[in-house]
Length: 535
Image (cartoon, rainbow, N blue to C red):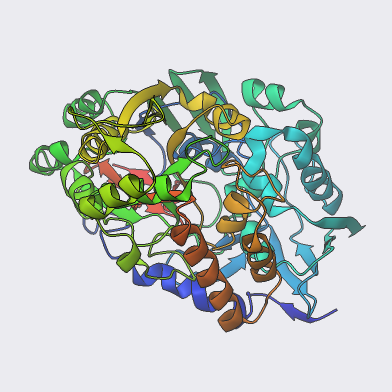
């Protein structure tokens, strides 16, 4: 066994610091109320744009759903959004073997779930062992635990997780909502039951009521006393209740905040920013680390498996125009497949330029000839694709309508197909798409392995290649410099082959009323409500 740590070793932290360097595009906590003293009690009403139809944090991946269900569970560790450091939460300390294959967590005593049962190493073991059985919705959690060889509850407070290969990403993974810990009874439920009935966690809030596509109500957990070491307040949360309302229309969310019907909203649209600020609301923004918004090709599609076509699409997209026209202010065009706030990010902007003439040349050389109307055909077949997108953000449709116009300019015909966010996993992992629009947030570069390794889910139907070896090797490399080099190589491979077409970085922007204080972002730019209070 290697060293015992109360904090993550430096080699895990160097890249994490980079998260902060690029996150200056807005504020964190809303402290517009000045020096007022925190106040216990009250209800916070938060409007989101969509609902994935699931209340299990181990299964959800959409920000709008994560905002609420994250408050139900604690994690073994937490990640400091300011430094990237991994710090204690349910685990007071941990040991990591020198080859990063064995992780031993020492759990804090006295933690209970809201059903009264105790947190033990055996319960955590049940959690991690149940994840693979959750199916396609738990893709993130499954990826974090891939390669697990053995999980042992050494005693009630000591858990050991052993991997077949070195696993540099696992400690950060234990800080995510995807590996939030649920009660033993919840681990026995089916994946669907966990979604519809909800889970029991040890978090600062409990699930009160859930009405799909309408609202979710959280109640304060009385007696809560085991919060993250990052939180300001000890003990219970300030708020008595939190209500998340699903309001799909951006204008309705904005109007609701202006009229005082809700206290905070997600997905603030660029067009509404000035009006919100004029009404006294605060805009809070933080760039999301992870895989940027992209046009992901189904690489098994008969035409899209042709690299020249994928490259032409990449050159045909004007990223700056999309970022500046559609997304909220401060949004940056993609300069790699990873956002610039992600540890290990590599600037590949020179390869992600807008060059319509180069795109046309590539298609001409590939046999796609333009007709009188500008559309291209080859062997009598039109160069046309459908982009599938999901209604979880007001920017998705206008962004893709602009992409549609831009690609028409190089002779590519695009149809847009809207789907519900609850269909995301089945559509992407089932391969029922040609191009799909999406992003994935995570403050660790191993998100590349989750998305692009053919040994895992392989949602983009990539062929086996040297990329697999690079992604596997970075996951097992504990030397940060060496790992950064491998991560850079993986980004270059994805971009050079245009396996996906990076477009813009996601920036989370919230509108928050004056009466709300300390509504904070966590490391992945989702919200943490334990310290939040209202006047």
